[in-house]
Image (cartoon, rainbow, N blue to C red):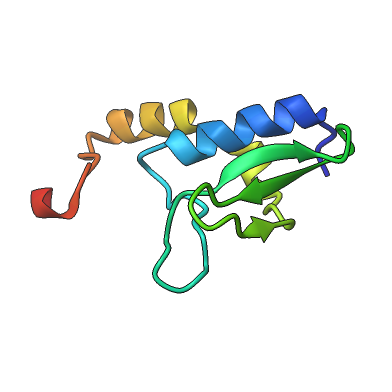
Length: 91
């Protein structure tokens, strides 16, 4: 387990959510599918993900999000000369 402050967790979650190479953490409510936003709750005691549209709250954040480094992944992909697809019509 990686030990991070809540502010560091929020930063890493935002990096994950902004990365074009992964599937973002999205709302699971019917017909919503909006990207969840990290929030620090209860006077800084813990981090949650919240849907800005419907206010759904997800308390579980996958641990791998904290370990992931999008910039390193992009560098590795460039070394392999792979194309990074921004949307499906490019495939």
